[in-house]
Length: 246
Image 1 (cartoon, rainbow, N blue to C red):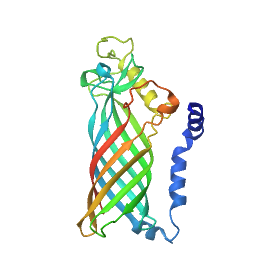
Image 2: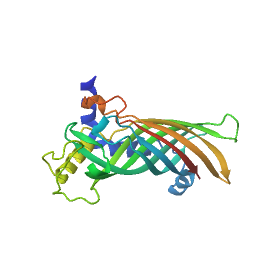
Image 3: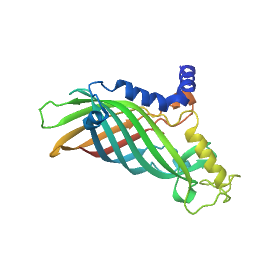
């Protein structure tokens, strides 16, 4: 099983963005005859999410980051039951490279090596139900997500500063090298691939607007083929937030 997922990853890794765009285009219904008609059928949303990045590394990392995460979305309704949705959520926090664990972990401020801005891109079919007519809408969805992370030098540091972890004042590398290790970790072996599932409810708010909430869970599926010995909950994500659709 591990070999199968490893082979699948190697074959799809370099083409995943093109595949997403092609699928979104091919699956879009052909009833709209012009770009203007397609655009007018799109439904837009903005959201604010409280994002939980699960960690379980004891003193080797900071406690679980709980981060504000703004986001946007656009969906195209195929029929009253099914829509296709593209979403983007942004977050930012500090990370360090832990020499003992040989991977990037959430950082307390005094051990920071890099400031990471994550852009979580998601593509998903959305099933919509209206059990009580126009009173509210129930949404259920699941799809493929990608955490596209940009790695920056942490504030107040220089690349030639000595790198240190908790209980290890001199790891033998500098901050610049640690930041490169963080980048290699996040972008290597498909650690940006995060399938997810979620659900939410929307209520009429004003004219054609709806106000609702979302619950989402992202799965670190890359753990299957990397074979890393991580605590069970480590690298999962959970999001709780509100959503305005118009």
